[in-house]
Image (cartoon, helix red, strand yellow):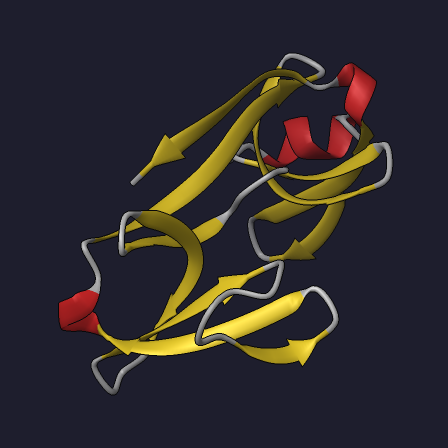
Length: 122
Protein backbone atom coordinates (compact mmCIF):
# COMPACT_ATOMS: atom_id res chain seq x y z
CA UNK A 1 0.00 0.00 0.00
CA UNK A 2 1.34 3.41 -0.98
CA UNK A 3 0.81 6.12 1.64
CA UNK A 4 0.80 9.87 1.12
CA UNK A 5 -0.88 11.79 3.90
CA UNK A 6 -1.22 12.08 7.65
CA UNK A 7 -0.80 9.11 9.98
CA UNK A 8 -1.81 9.28 13.64
CA UNK A 9 -0.84 6.89 16.44
CA UNK A 10 -3.80 6.40 18.76
CA UNK A 11 -4.00 3.74 21.48
CA UNK A 12 -0.80 2.20 20.12
CA UNK A 13 -2.06 1.77 16.55
CA UNK A 14 -1.42 3.78 13.40
CA UNK A 15 -4.36 5.15 11.43
CA UNK A 16 -4.73 7.25 8.32
CA UNK A 17 -5.68 10.66 9.70
CA UNK A 18 -6.90 14.14 8.90
CA UNK A 19 -6.29 16.95 11.38
CA UNK A 20 -9.12 19.41 11.74
CA UNK A 21 -9.05 23.11 12.54
CA UNK A 22 -11.33 22.34 15.47
CA UNK A 23 -8.63 20.58 17.54
CA UNK A 24 -9.88 17.15 16.56
CA UNK A 25 -8.27 14.41 14.51
CA UNK A 26 -10.27 12.24 12.13
CA UNK A 27 -8.96 8.68 12.15
CA UNK A 28 -9.71 6.27 9.30
CA UNK A 29 -9.61 2.48 9.19
CA UNK A 30 -10.17 0.08 6.27
CA UNK A 31 -12.09 -2.46 8.38
CA UNK A 32 -14.64 -2.32 11.20
CA UNK A 33 -12.88 -1.02 14.31
CA UNK A 34 -14.39 -0.51 17.76
CA UNK A 35 -15.98 2.94 17.99
CA UNK A 36 -15.53 3.78 14.29
CA UNK A 37 -18.53 4.61 12.11
CA UNK A 38 -18.86 3.19 8.62
CA UNK A 39 -18.69 5.88 5.95
CA UNK A 40 -18.88 3.38 3.09
CA UNK A 41 -17.72 -0.21 2.64
CA UNK A 42 -14.02 -0.37 3.46
CA UNK A 43 -13.90 3.12 5.05
CA UNK A 44 -14.50 3.75 8.76
CA UNK A 45 -13.98 6.96 10.77
CA UNK A 46 -13.63 8.01 14.36
CA UNK A 47 -13.10 11.58 15.55
CA UNK A 48 -10.91 12.03 18.61
CA UNK A 49 -9.48 15.05 20.45
CA UNK A 50 -5.94 15.89 19.33
CA UNK A 51 -4.83 15.52 22.96
CA UNK A 52 -5.57 11.76 22.75
CA UNK A 53 -3.30 11.23 19.74
CA UNK A 54 0.15 9.93 20.65
CA UNK A 55 1.81 11.06 17.43
CA UNK A 56 0.80 12.78 14.19
CA UNK A 57 3.08 12.69 11.17
CA UNK A 58 2.92 13.16 7.44
CA UNK A 59 3.98 10.15 5.37
CA UNK A 60 5.28 10.64 1.86
CA UNK A 61 6.28 7.81 -0.50
CA UNK A 62 9.06 8.67 -2.92
CA UNK A 63 10.63 6.78 -5.81
CA UNK A 64 12.76 7.01 -8.93
CA UNK A 65 11.31 6.53 -12.39
CA UNK A 66 13.21 6.91 -15.63
CA UNK A 67 16.17 8.20 -13.62
CA UNK A 68 14.28 11.07 -11.96
CA UNK A 69 12.82 11.66 -8.48
CA UNK A 70 9.07 11.44 -7.90
CA UNK A 71 6.48 11.31 -5.12
CA UNK A 72 3.87 8.56 -5.42
CA UNK A 73 0.45 10.14 -5.00
CA UNK A 74 -1.79 7.22 -5.97
CA UNK A 75 -2.02 3.67 -7.22
CA UNK A 76 -4.39 1.59 -9.29
CA UNK A 77 -3.87 -2.06 -10.12
CA UNK A 78 -0.35 -2.30 -11.63
CA UNK A 79 0.12 1.46 -12.02
CA UNK A 80 1.44 4.22 -9.75
CA UNK A 81 0.50 7.89 -10.07
CA UNK A 82 3.80 9.74 -9.77
CA UNK A 83 4.52 13.46 -9.39
CA UNK A 84 7.85 14.83 -10.57
CA UNK A 85 9.90 16.58 -7.87
CA UNK A 86 12.87 17.70 -9.97
CA UNK A 87 11.46 21.14 -10.72
CA UNK A 88 12.76 21.33 -14.30
CA UNK A 89 10.04 21.79 -16.91
CA UNK A 90 12.23 20.69 -19.88
CA UNK A 91 12.93 17.37 -18.11
CA UNK A 92 9.23 16.90 -17.29
CA UNK A 93 8.31 17.58 -20.91
CA UNK A 94 10.99 15.19 -22.18
CA UNK A 95 9.57 12.48 -19.89
CA UNK A 96 6.11 13.03 -21.43
CA UNK A 97 4.51 14.01 -18.11
CA UNK A 98 1.09 15.65 -17.87
CA UNK A 99 1.17 19.25 -16.66
CA UNK A 100 -1.42 19.43 -13.89
CA UNK A 101 -0.69 23.00 -12.77
CA UNK A 102 2.15 25.51 -12.85
CA UNK A 103 5.22 23.45 -11.88
CA UNK A 104 3.21 20.28 -11.20
CA UNK A 105 3.87 17.33 -13.51
CA UNK A 106 2.39 13.84 -13.14
CA UNK A 107 2.07 10.54 -14.99
CA UNK A 108 0.88 6.97 -14.56
CA UNK A 109 3.95 4.73 -14.34
CA UNK A 110 3.93 0.93 -14.56
CA UNK A 111 4.79 -0.37 -11.09
CA UNK A 112 7.43 -2.63 -12.66
CA UNK A 113 9.39 0.43 -13.90
CA UNK A 114 9.43 2.28 -10.57
CA UNK A 115 12.54 1.90 -8.42
CA UNK A 116 13.78 2.83 -4.94
CA UNK A 117 10.32 3.15 -3.35
CA UNK A 118 10.66 4.63 0.17
CA UNK A 119 8.36 5.95 2.85
CA UNK A 120 9.49 9.10 4.59
CA UNK A 121 7.93 10.47 7.78
CA UNK A 122 7.86 14.25 7.81
